[in-house]
Length: 376
Image 1 (cartoon, one colour):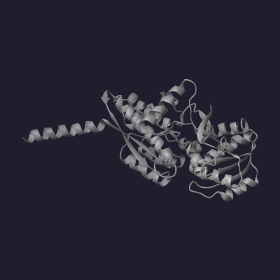
Image 2 (image 1 turned 45 degrees about the vertical axis):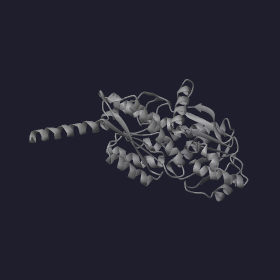
Image 3 (image 1 turned 60 degrees about the vertical axis):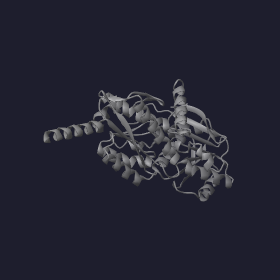
Image 4 (image 1 turned 90 degrees about the vertical axis):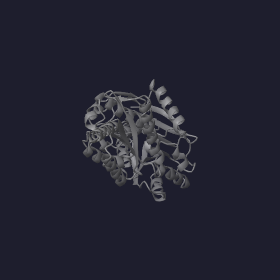
């Protein structure tokens, strides 16, 4: 009798072990609460959709069918909360992480994932510092601020004929980095920075900044930050009789900016750049993804959802090729990825930056984004 009980116990334990090995946990972290929660939910939804697709197709690793499981966390866009959540995911022994959302949260969290040996792919963080730390666990599926700033500087001085620019950043890693790269590009193209101002990502009153900028008579204001700040700034620019154009990166590249400006944003007033985009034959795949996303969640893609989807799929693809979901085993395959995604080919350079990243420029008409061009 005792032998039978012992055998049953061993069998149950073995079954439990096999079951746990067949679960692949993918963490996702972004600001799901706070002023830019719509960006965070955008990538969380896409990660969930990718996991649903992986499970629906019956993905196997080393000949065994596995079930991918989403472990979603909220860092509220706060660096301190980001590190706390990162440690929580490491302790939970997730197999990989998609996130974080902002550069200011991604950079401090990346050290924790590296220490824990957990691969991390950000679908939205653009600061060059993220991949310059030497962490072999850090990757991104979008272009960085160097590429973004250069493209915006060229477009401002070229197509827009801008020469005098006032720059404002929100003192985040993202905002400061983007302003620095744009300023460098603008000056290389013969433009001039006539004013340098800063605010913070929680500010609501910009009257003093706008007044000082107005006195310099710029052709344009370049803002390094998010639409939650840019929208109210546009409204106060209008109130103070300052009707110049605004340019920024993917942080302001959402239809939400029109709502946040109180409807004061004029057609053609804002130009923004998304760190990614597809051209030619890739457009059909991207259009299908957007349609599938809307059907699944009932809302439109904001910006980074396709890059979160591809981040999840390329991570799973590395696991399949490695024959293991163990981070140490599939990490070398992730570093050598060559995956055809909805955003185009996904491959990483030695630092973990996506190779041949594209930039998409947008304007706004009737409060909605409208495509200008896709460039390198």
